[in-house]
Image (cartoon, rainbow, N blue to C red):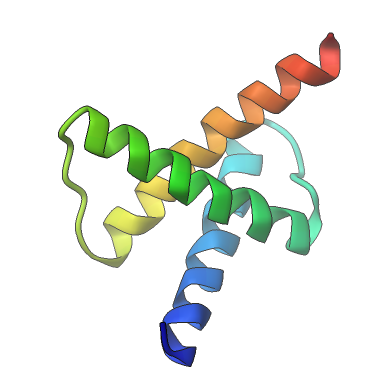
Amino acid sequence: MDFVSVLISLAVGAVAGLLAGTVMKGGGFGLQGNIIIGLIGGVVGGFLFRLLAIAAGGLIGSIVTATLGAVILLVLIGLFKKA
């Protein structure tokens, strides 16, 4: 993975984390937390999309996939925080 790919992944993670924090009616976890949530959300979303045989290509597809994964991740975090 080259430097440009890493920067794009971080940007997608940041945008996805920011969008997920907004969707979940919270401010998120700050910039670094949003990047981490977005990156992990990208992995979760990618896994779920492959499992359901859904294809989302390109930059917008990556952002949508990562955002949906991050929302699912935030829901799970919220369940564990309440318990």
